[in-house]
Structure formats: C-alpha cells, structure tokens
Length: 274
Image 1: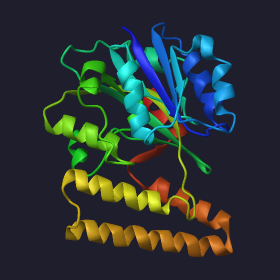
Image 2: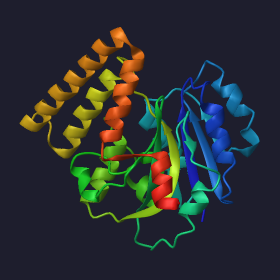
Image 3: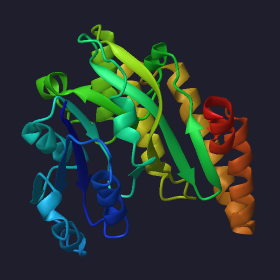
C-alpha cells in the first residue's frame, strides 16, 4: 500500500534537510516522496537537489501559499494514502509510517491518525487525541500525524481561501459529512512548535478567526471573549519578556504542564509504552 508523503517549503534552508532525511529514512517500503517548493532563493533548492534521485516528484515555482502548494502535491500523488510533513518537522522515528500501517485499516476508514510531539524550546510534549466532537472547536489531532485516503483528499483538496486553517476546514467538513476516522497508538510526527513573543501573535489571531469562520462561531460572544483572552495573554507575555525571556519560558512551561491536552513526552512514554 503506497503512502505519498508531501513536503511543502519556501526559503527553508534551516530545516529542509532534516525533514528530507526523516522521510527517506523511513523503514516503510512503499513511500512516495513529493517535494513542492515555492521558488526558494536561499539555497533550499540546492539541498533538495542533493536527494533528487530519491524524491518521486519535485518542483520549485511560485505558488499561492502553503495550501496551494499542498494541493499541487495532492494532484500528483499516486499513493493510496496521503500525508504531509512540512519543512523543519520530522517523523518521530524511522518506523513511524510502518507502525501506522501495521494496523488493519477497514476499507471504510477515510483518515488514520496518531499522536504528534510538539517540540518547544523548553521541552517536548505529546498532544492527546481528543474526542472527534472537538472538531466543533478545533483540530482534535495534529495534521502531520494524520493519513488521508487519496480519493478523499483528491476529491476536495484544501480551500485556499483560508490562509492558515484550510487543513482544519478540510477535516471539519469531512467529519460533519460522516467521514470515518481511526485513531492508532503511534507517535507519528515531531512538530517544531514556536511561541514567540510577538512574531506569532498575528498568526494566532488569524488562526482563531479562520477556525471560527469554519465552525460557525465567528463574531459570537464566545468568539469575542476568546479573542480578548488571547490578547491579554499576548500582552502579558510581551511585558514579561521586557524583564526576562527566561521568565517567559518558565511561565510557558508551567502553562503547558497545566494544560490537560498535553503530556510531557517522557511521561507519555512511561504511561503508554513503558
């Protein structure tokens, strides 16, 4: 059963090689690797060309954003399953894909998903697989920990009207239309997360805005209160960073440890695989 892994990138010289190596080192024998570059000018293309003989499809050209690039990859994919691993991210280990497809997957399953590690400057955390009813608020699993049947993915692709949350839009509507999802007890991907002082603020707010437009909560009282709460946390983070960036990191670590959605990786491994 062939699995198409798609990496999209743009000026990703700092992280592209470790991502490529992570895919090419997978033990699963039927991996088709597709790399869609947005016309990088920083040397990313030179790195990709080093591995071109092991990449099934590669193109470097301008695109209309990350989801337009993903759609390009989807259109050329020939695997029965499609998954994404973006530049800078890696698979958890060399057996990740093999571990997922060692499970018997019923013919009516549209999406298989595992766990995703979130790597921060202050530590690694595993996000729990939340109930699928969480789709009413956001993603119950990580995008890069999921595998979608190609015929399902190719049928609709990603709606490029959304610049940040088109993946949520895809899975949300698939779930609402009766799609079948199957969880597996496998750590799939290691996602390089960031909690910058200011650079990510606009992204956080835009993600929440798009997600709310998708699930129908945009402009409601709930939406407005959530935006206020996010803005207050961002302002507090900026104030603390003036005095000590280490203080910000300690506060973020404490908040992450108190967040019931996340489990420190070492504790997760002890409980689930110990």
